[in-house]
Length: 133
Image (tube, rainbow, N blue to C red; front, side, top):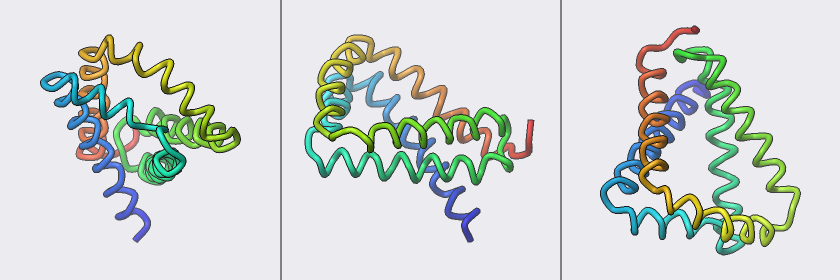
């Protein structure tokens, strides 16, 4: 059962990155506003942290059944470690960091879109192809 849930979360995360890519490439202003919306309140901060934990755990659980398993396992652990760091500091620090960094990222929204497209596509292909590398 946990494997099915992990698979679903990984597929949804891959689809999220593809939708973010499409928004970034075709509706850059909308994508920029979306990205600026993270960490604007305690609720949004903790919602983001919860999603990061869910995706991180799902990647770790699903990685052995994915192509490039080591890379996706590492990505899952990276998500968990960075999320733990963000949970150890007040959410306002995350907010201030996002207010400084996101505008820099949105200046390169096409690159954000292309990276999101590659990451989302790789996640979906890795799930579909399965197996360890």
